[in-house]
Length: 595
Image (cartoon, rainbow, N blue to C red; front, side):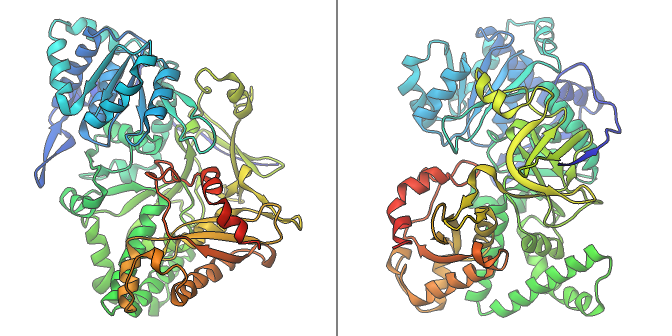
């Protein structure tokens, strides 16, 4: 059993709650710009004074509507300014917020609203309202529903006109560190989603430490970040709260199709994303360069960026690499940085392993990706790479005040002030995940090196055992496969089978560029058996196999005509693969791999 702790070197607040941040901001720097709202092709800044006032008006409306201390109020919306506004208004009313992914089905919405006992819902639009309406009859606790696109902010602000400042302050200060701040439901890759109870103290511990240790992100001059991941996910939520706490200018965007122009207009100094986003940016750039006849130039630039980053890690970059890097910085890297607005030097990645190649590539380009690790149950990060303590391929060291332990079976266990108190109304699941002395069982397998850097190697429940008794972690192979420009998703199979195999889907954005460059026409479905396409995927398989032993390597694969998506039900909103769903829906294709 291996264990590593990072000592806590600062005092964390023992009183108060998350709303203290917006009150302090308005008192200390009332004219500081803390948020920005989209307006046409530009942005309207929101000061600390203005944000506190607007939060207060909405909170008064919630109080007037009958929301009581400790009640749960749900939020169903894309990432937008009003999401953050309502989050803080719910807390100022003394209640707890219950985020729901805006892509959730009516059945999922019904389960979360019923399980949480939500008394009110803030929905974004008519489509979300329709889903709620279809299940409302079965929700006895639900009394109020407001819609953002139907003037929910103005309606609540008017409703609260008769609520006084003293009453609002009494509600705002009702919660302490040990009180529930939010119920975040797991994405439900297996079974029904479970509500993770996260307190104000969980967030205060997480951010008290993270903001201090990531000061180059949160305390830089003119620091700003653009949120485009779902705020229903704890990863985006923690950045939201950290930005508010640190007075980092915060913007929101939910239109991924317009993400590049939005980034270019907002010009953030740091961003956060899941690895799939960084993979897509790299793959799209590679395919476009190839289509324009500059594929070999891009490949040399990528190899140089990786070599440059590896040299930085060793403390010495060879002179020849420096020279090539300077040339490619003008020809290639500057264009990639420009897609992020030109000011972005750091990114935070989580949700899945990024992979060493991409980590080195981006650092060599000039964007250092700080990979971290955490779960909803740990209020986001428990480990993170820091600008001054960064090891590509790892998820960093434990945050201050956090301990990691590798159990005898390889499972990663964590203990710290950000670890949740349990699952809402589910003592059995709580007992399974959380020991009496505070150790949380992550369900992930990993290792810790002598310097305390953690590496995640796979999911405990996803380990495949071949007919020959070989244990195989599919994540290693799947991550490598997805790094190829043409690959969108991959599922590695082989449990109780004679060898390892894989199902592969094709990236719908990269495929047309690839096909056009080779004079091919048709959709993916028309070319799943095309020799050139199969040869390209075989190269991706061969590259993935270099990471494992021969017994663990992929022997056969099949290219599928359709991609796996969140809309199709195969991916969670945080883009994790629902293995049980894919295994069920493609059982015939999997069976044919072993004929």
